[in-house]
View (cartoon, one colour):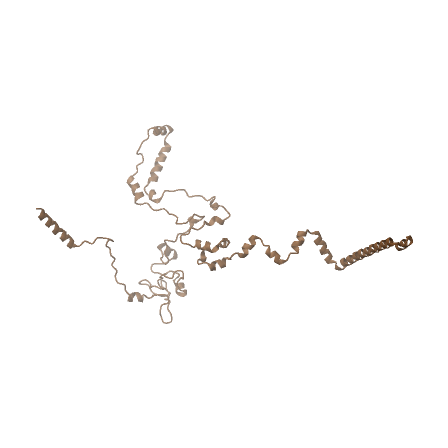
Length: 355
């Protein structure tokens, strides 16, 4: 119809341009229709994929970028804390790298220089950081509600009897009236306490005991007063109280001797001498499993002791010479008798000359 109208009007050059524009518009409309149909077909064929694209459209561009990010890029963008944990040594590696692994603790690996920290902790006379620095509760919070022991005088002062004398004086003061107390404030009486000052002097300068003092670098912590101090104890020596508790009569072996003879001496005390194991038994005792017997001596198939001189043969062969200690004073001047005689002759000669 457009072409017919153009030809009827004159069929000039302008009519041809109009026809070409109309044909271009029709072609564009057909392409739009075809694209729409193809898009609907693809959506129908893909089905589930179309739903996924709709979900991506609903999210923000930042979330879509994070979802499409590659795993390598995610590893590169770690936080500073995660990067420190990746480059940090483990406790086992730190113990293998230092000379004193027994001082390594679990939190030492978080230090800037763990090896230097362990070296300083293992240094001689180094004062450790108080152990309550990493505790969540406050210092000595567990001692709340614990009844404190009343203060008492030291033993060397209590033996003087000063406490009883002061208590008697305080009881006498409590029985006095107010008038008597005010009179004694104005005119006090002296010498009412019968105290022997020589006894007090001896208590402080003769019988005074040294109080318990903390060592270098020691700090009080909860439960320290309940710990048992084993510095005065010696392995292998049995006190009378321990023998009575074990039911050991005089001359009887300890109850653990049979197991030591079977399994060997304790490895923690290599120089410990145990009678019946690596040392001779006391005089009058005998080996055997009868009551009061010292078991069976540990020997090999040739009768040679395994752990030491259990029969006392070496001690009999190698009797030590009697040692006489030197009791002279160190640095004492040795004066000869000849010097005294020479001094006497000089004095006689000088006296004769003066005369």
